[in-house]
Length: 117
Image (cartoon, rainbow, N blue to C red; front, top):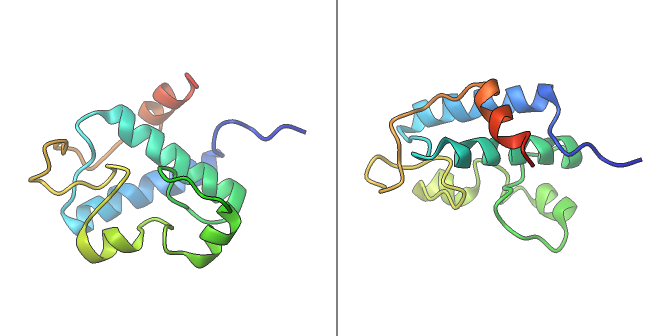
């Protein structure tokens, strides 16, 4: 049986809610391109579905299960927690050229972008 290509509603809502609250708590903002935000949140939710953890979807892993278990790249990853460095451009500091002014995104916005893949 083929795995679904999109994340479950449950984990998509969980990761959307987490991303919004984490951005507000850390004073970071989503990318000015909402498509980037949508794809990253979908990727986190899909990894939560498949691996049980929100492994960073923007990196290549030889063994995703091992990386998820190690937790270093689980969102928020160590570089984000320690230095506010988000490789995925999900959480951007206000001085970043790609930072938008939003800390919220709707499920409809996410699905509108990710259902095209």
